[in-house]
Length: 255
Image 1 (tube, rainbow, N blue to C red):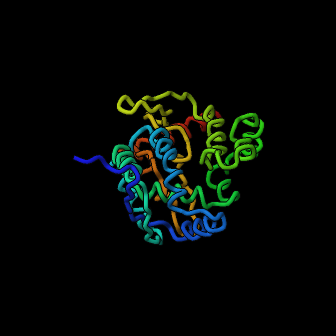
Image 2: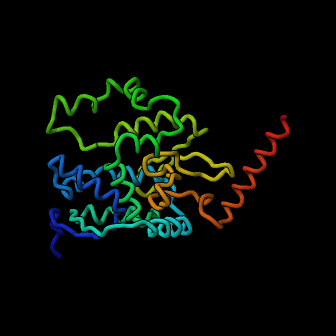
Image 3: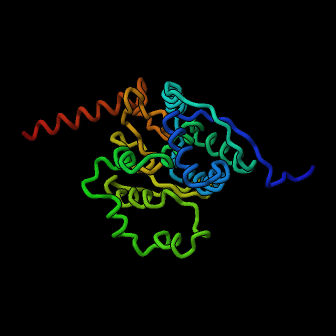
């Protein structure tokens, strides 16, 4: 049997929310980039990040709810030409973590297309301090701040480095954080516990729940991970609500 050509290309079709793909195409054109070639390079690292950040697989109920919410959005069908090994890796990670593949692409494209105000509103709206200043203060001596300037054609493709640094700074607010190593892949993730004691991934680019609405459109359909307590009608949702009610009642006892 002949070996697969590592340069072989596989085309996949994905449906992207129209406001996102229109904005991304505009930014890609302005940057003089070839979209699919850029994505192929980016996915080499982002699929590893997706596997690491979604360290707890979605339940089938969560998967189905994300799929239903995503299907409510006005999306445009596009074709992507990816290296065959990348397409295979994408399928393997999404299958193993029970991730809606198109939800991942919509989240990824949103991160690439969104302007600073949108990023702030979706990921950092509860922050009292400016996250960019905090990242600069903590990581100003790190390589990524200098690589593009000193090595303009050699810097790694890592457009979300600063955001990930900011979210890492906030991990201490999540309570006790435990490292979780997947024995099959060796990839290490981080988990904390929800109100009912269930392990959930710490907040990250791919696990932060976007509970905002844009007009009448819910962004839950852009979730790569959705805790079961946020899935309507589940036992976990009812248990979480009861626990929250208990906590609120105990606060009333203090008055």
